[in-house]
Each structure stands twice: as structure tokens, then as C-alpha cells.
Length: 257
Length: 95
Image 1 (cartoon, each protein chain N blue to C red):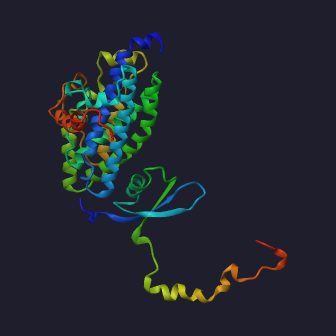
Image 2: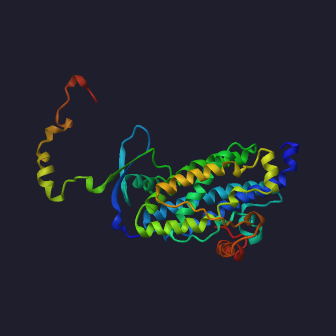
Image 3: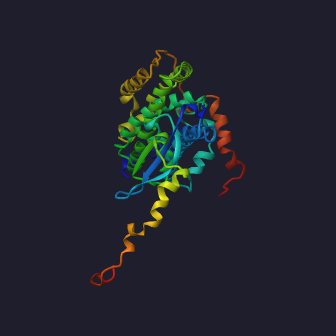
């Protein structure tokens, strides 16, 4: 590790943990569909996607834990931090909603991750670059699924169209903060480690727009925006998610199976 | 969602290059493309395949149990259709 990156070590730990928080929280939300999917095949497919996310979260957390030292593990990050310490973007923690809502969120985030991971693959940090290289293959498949379902539901029945449009309108205000960064990420962007998501916002919008229009859905022009995830300010939903996700580990510390 | 808008597909997997596609099971999906994605999720989670075929189950024309007399029994008394029926000439030796 060079001197420059040693100084950035704490930033790097926080950054890896943030990326992990995004992926773990979304993966957990998707895992809530297990056994509740609309039909068996889709149930399995959604659980697969959830596992891809949770697997990626483990890689990010393990890296953050390694950099932290002191015998820390991925579990310390996932199970022993409280709501304010999680720094995921808010869109990931919103409840799973109906199937249309889950698909709309996946579309937004799959397009986002396609660009994000492609950029992270070029990171000067080799571990993050390797995680991104693996993740991008999964993400291309996720995007194929969410695009496919958006077209089917948007251009489907009156009810499926309405549900998709409602989901898109409800989620839109949460898509702004995912392109913003604070000083911590700015330092890492300058060091060639972190991704500047604002650089592909226009492309994201164009990609999402193309799918929504083909699906006969309307791109919202609402101006409301919700922010705060990276500072640890969350919606009321994250606390409930953590309660369920962390229960076992907190009730039986260090239990193994 | 109920299954009424879905079709049944049969899934065939090729486990390695050079091998044949083998029937592995069936699944429900809206259309072929959809079926291919589900086949990937349901049948190749542990790297079981390098190629997938999906076919609508209703497109498969199959022989019926009742037809087995006329379809298969006539072969039973025609052992000469098997290579093993014919004695090997001495010159060939062991094969």
C-alpha cells in the first residue's frame, strides 16, 4: 500500500462498508420474497438475485473488516451496527412493496449498478475492482430480468400498468441521492478509488427512459428528493429491517451453524 | 399471480461441450425467452450446464402408453436388428 492510500485507509474502510450496506440491505429486502413469490419459478429467480447481492455484500464487508484489523469480521459490520451506522442509500431500504414495486426498484438499481460496477472495475483499489468484475456479470443478468418484467407489466393489463406507474412515481424521489457524493467519497474519487456516479447520471436517465417509454410508462418530472442515507439518516423502514436481520446474532452472540 | 397465464416448458441442458442436451425437468413461464431465464435460475444454479434448450410442452408429440403394443413389441422378435445377433467371423477375433 502506498503512502497516499494509507492516509485514505479509514475512508476506504467506510467506502467499502457503504457499498456493502447498499447491497446487504437490498439483498435482504429481496430475500423477503422467498416463499412469497408470485409463482415458484419467479420465487427462485428472486431468491437467486437476493443471494447475489448478499454474496457481494459479504465480499465488501470482509474487505472492510480486513482493513480494520483488530480481528473484526464481516459479522461485526452486518450484525452489530445500529441504524445510524448503516450508510446505505435510502432506496435500498424501502419495503419490498408489491411485485411491481420490487421490479421498478430493481430496474432503477440494475441500470445504476451496470454503470457503477463498470466504473468500479477500473478502480485503483484491486480488491474493489475484483469484486466489481464479478458483480457486473451478475448485474447484467439482473438487468435483463428487470427490463423484461418492466416491459411485461408496464405494457400489460390496466392494473399491472397502474401498479408499475405508481411504483415509479413513489420511487423517483429516492433516485437522486444515489448520484451524489460527500467529501469522503470525493477524496477517494480523486485518488482513483471510488466511483463518481454523477458522471453517468445522464446515461442512467437515458437508459431508464428508453425502457419506461417502451413499456408505455411515464418518466416522472417530480422535483421532490429524499436524501440522508450516507449520513446515517434513514427512513423508518431500516430499523425494522435490522431488527429482523440482526435478531439471531444479537440473541445468540457468535453462534455458529 | 396464478398459473393460468403461464405455459409449461420442458428444459434440456447440455452439461458440457460435446455432450447431448438432456431433459432435466419442466417449468412455467410466459414465453420462450422468459422460460430460458427461469431455466437458468432453476436448473443451472450449481454450474450444471453450458447450453439450455426450452420447448413448449404442448409442442412435444409423444407416443402413448396404449400405442406401446404396436410401436415397440414388433421389435421383440427381430433379434437380427441387433449387431450381437450375428456371429463374428473367426478372422475378426475379439471385438
